[in-house]
Image (cartoon, rainbow, N blue to C red):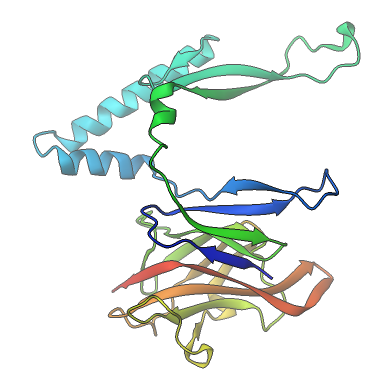
Length: 252
């Protein structure tokens, strides 16, 4: 099962997932940080909101010009400093047994090296929760597909859940909306609202897509609960594993 330790007085939404280190047999774990992604649209929207004198269309146009120029420099084989936040540089995937096997035109990829300025922005982060992962479903984000807004869904609109081990298994598996009280605690499971199977149009280990039930109450806040016993196409667990999302608001 998934074990969550919530830390009080946390001022951030950063959560840590501890996963068993399969390379060592000493019971140690390695940690990954759940991604709370800010999209390109989020960045432009906040800048425009905080700087009323800037035309948002000009802001977007300038950002696109910068994007194109960065890509142009990369095409020329250059490393590029990105707003003094770090350097994007070109690396190569090479696995050769001898010098003669090194490819002339290999597979290139882009890597990023952050500056001290970028790393210093993380100094005040706190851990919101720690998840001990044992193949239980893990919810990283809940997003309205149309607006790209996170943790705010629209009745009847398509939504996306990303994470790990999310794929739904047998008929008892499912996506549930559980209303929360003023303390953020879940109501009794008998009152949870299940997303009909016909409304789930993407069922993958790393992503679930579905239409938000029209029966939800927009005056309430919810947490999404994933229940699944999926192992493989032909194998399911006897017990169900669960994962619970952050609080989600519902819009009409």
